[in-house]
Image (tube, rainbow, N blue to C red; front, side, top):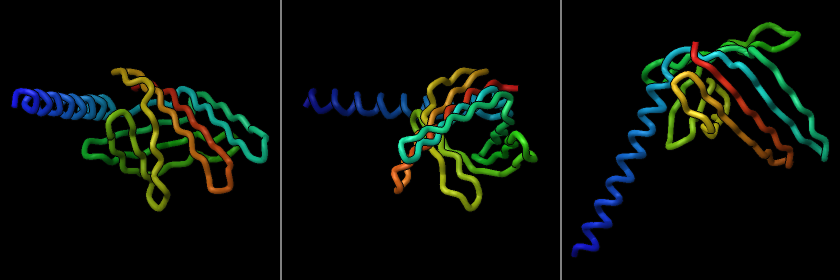
Length: 137
């Protein structure tokens, strides 16, 4: 009986710490973040095409899981869009209206600094990676 009580207590502690981590990330994200650096690659047919940009725009995270973004694209006008967001463990999922959600692994979660990473493999075998380094405004 003591063994089962110990297992139950351990499970509850793990669940509570996971919830508090999600709350901590959520609270830290609320506000506006500058995308200091965007690093991306697209690999297709054995060739890799890198892309790097600095001061690439902003994400604004609002309470309740909504937000908006302004992305600065070189040689084009800024792209602005609304999105919903959700934190789950150490990932964040951003869903732009009428687009597939993108889930990023949160590599750094600090009060004034975030680093996110995503790798997507498409049915064609092409691979796209994205790394965002952000600071709070």
